Length: 129
Image (cartoon, helix red, strand yellow):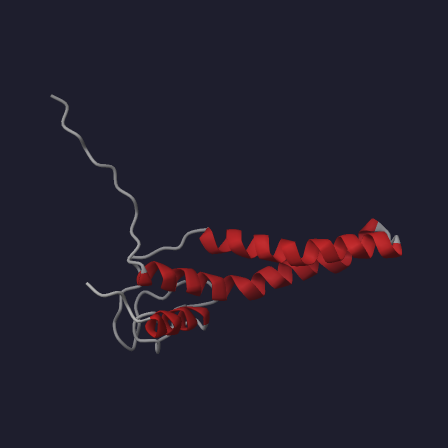
């Protein structure tokens, strides 16, 4: 059994990042800002059987925090600004960054799930004699 072409994997990830169907790369993946559509209108691929849950949110919060928190800390130390000013600037910054990154990350994780044929884990039942 041969592995999928790396170019196909790249196209699938790009499609997910752009919010497109990971199968045909054409139809919309989302019905709204973060809600997945039920199926692809172009190829009929069923989106409902897959769910990325909270995985993308974890990565987005981590990435946004790595970028914004050091800037807020440097701002606070360098300017000795009042804490309310630091919060006024950087809380909306981190929320905005999370909102911008969440949809592409959600689409990419969905595409990764499809590419790797990921499924929920199941426990094996063992007969005890």
